[in-house]
Length: 284
Length: 201
Image 1: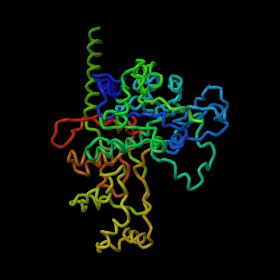
Image 2: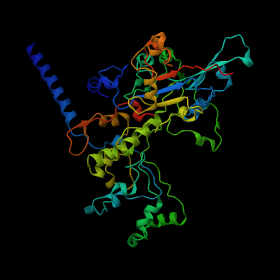
Image 3: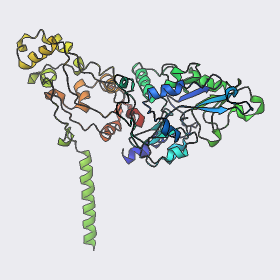
Image 4: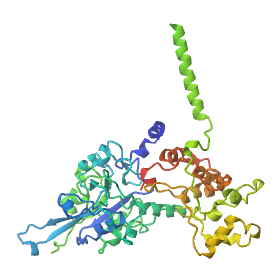
């Protein structure tokens, strides 16, 4: 990579939060998660383990706060005085929000995490030196560090179970950061197929692993640039806009009809994941 | 004093012109450092006999006749044994040569030929043959052997294929940075993608 190329195409290398003069051209991958539909069943998390070769760290290391779930279900207990068996809880699937103005990107000393032209927050394992600065700066705590090489013991997957590992996803070594990629290996295949047929990726043509297994269909994923995409329609009906740091739901009292919001928007990270507020009572 | 100044100016100019000349000079297609290891194949497949020029005794078979997936898949594909036999069962003149005898031994034993991989990229790299072949062969109308040769070298002069190019990231990027016309007639050019996730998985 020569310096001249870097300087001439600086805007391509350094995609920042969206503005009117530099919109996303072909793709802007985004997600919406309906918390009213989410039952906290953890199927998304399990699917992510299977799709992305995530290591299982074991009970002991998990107790020390070490884990690799790229999508995790956060559980919030109701504080209405009821005890455990009757106590209600709310669930929130938390994954990398693929922020348009990502705090992790600006602090990486080696440029291992960048913004792609498709609006993804990329993590390049080969370039990562393991400073863990990005993790410290991520307000969503959606980045996971490899403290060990996995698997730590031999024969973790007795034959033929090793066949379930995904050859399209790198196994990350010790000392690198990893996080949700919006299943970029699937996006690449879908984009290539679409390109061979001279079109853009159609809505529903590519599913993320978590979306694919969600039994209640709480997760939608698609291209925000595509006017026919379900995810774009959801963002529009909820009046959530990518380049605003305060949405209709929180802007005025009377606009309480809409449910869409993004987490920690006031930090101006401009996330690509919209959540739909839960209206029903907590699950028990 | 002026003498020294003149000398230094001259030297700087010389170095500058020499370096710019070196940058413009045609780079050799392959250097000794880029050559991959010799790979022992179960059958010494003569690429030169199949794909070579007619003047040199070659059959000028299109690369994609055997590596048929290159235009429509991520991998170029090693042809199945049926493909070899499909032609060779009716080529009586070479039937009794040692390599063809070995080929028919595999065929009669109903076993695939255990070909060895020559161009092996690291596991973290995603390389798509289809995208490159569609661009260079079908959009730009480049000759197939030239387009394949960008990465595989001049295979039609080799017997057993051997890696000719470094296949390193810097080498890939050096081509992705160049201006490539979008099709055979257009003057519009584009670059290859320079997004990390396009190739790194």
